[in-house]
Length: 210
Image (cartoon, rainbow, N blue to C red; front, side, top):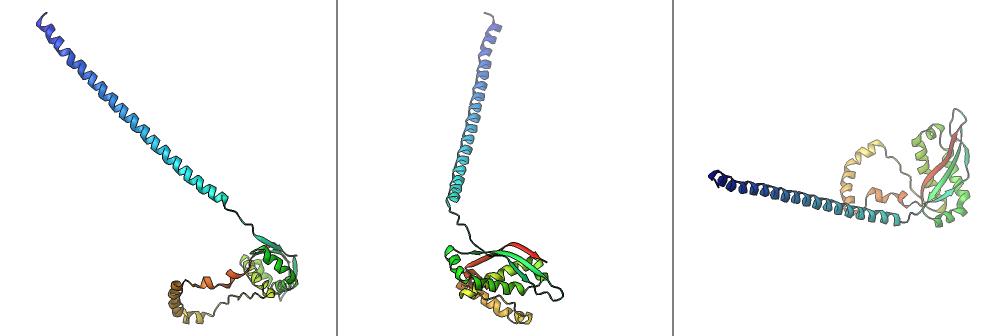
């Protein structure tokens, strides 16, 4: 064998070894990438499953909460003359009272003539201008909730707006009282008598003014 052949034969194995090394390294890198991707996918899938399970638990809890339907007391429609002075105007109003429970709805029945009278007095004190606006209807509803329980011996005090000068003079005193009320946990909202009114709100089923 010549010297050239010996040199070629000795140079060939290192080149093949280098190629094999590159293939092995590439295979290892591919294995690491595939394995890492699989691990990330499994982690994401596990997190999604945990989130779904948690949300499903909340949804189930919400579905299990019983919803108590409101108690309504429907009244016969009212047809009244309004308090307009320049022209004769009248209103035809249908309303339904929403009360706190069935027991109070039954307690109202013996007082119904007096309750209707109280509502009539409120309606006939209003003008068409007051009742045409949405704010007027809302204010009327609040006033009726207080009027209907008075014949039953429940007196819900009306909120009376203080004169402006009284408000200005009492501003400093109110600021001092606010901190004390917050400390005691007895705020003005907590003292509001409306929170104790068994008639929660008034729903108008019809409202016609002519």
